[in-house]
Image (tube, rainbow, N blue to C red; front, top):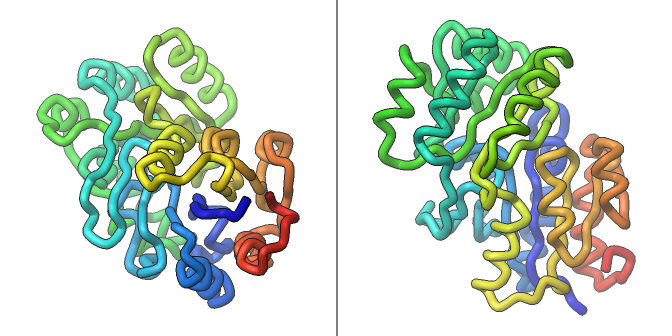
Length: 281
């Protein structure tokens, strides 16, 4: 069956290590749209983190904050939202803060962190050459718990920067005892992150809901990803492709593996689909 909807992770998949969308990848996405294929970004980034340098007219939809929100890419109109209950969000943030961990709460398409964590994060983005993303997607606040308490948009996701494996295991064990949450591990700026959301704030569920709204069968979908928060997406899609730089868990979950993000691996998948090659379906 022909592919009618492609879901693409951004970081580690579309973007290279310099956080750039190469001309070949850009052209592949645009060619897919010209061929009548719907293209969706499916990312852990909040909506405002899908910055202008990667906004393409060819991308019709953005599934953001690990599946918490789905937007029309042209208008940013919200099409689907799944949020953490406020009391649970406050408790998660409080538990992380008690452990001295960095916490970012995402709401309204932005991530909020307390100083000095926010300042340290911006410095890390500066050192990595990705400060534009940090400034576009993050805001500082004086009291994260008060911000969550007064939020009216809905808490999309909470990211806990666990920094080391001991802290990661302790926080993950605590979260495992809390019902009604989705908890996934990703590779963050400092090491391991915990991404915590509503159980239906899942890239795969959001992707399938988008496909259904477009009248696209699951069998006619394809997804490409590299990290733990992509597993739901990759398992949901009709065909799943892991990047060459993906984690071993992601590679095991996929039937196909393409080249890494330094060698236009995602672009090569899209090009093969457009040429009606059956190697990814």
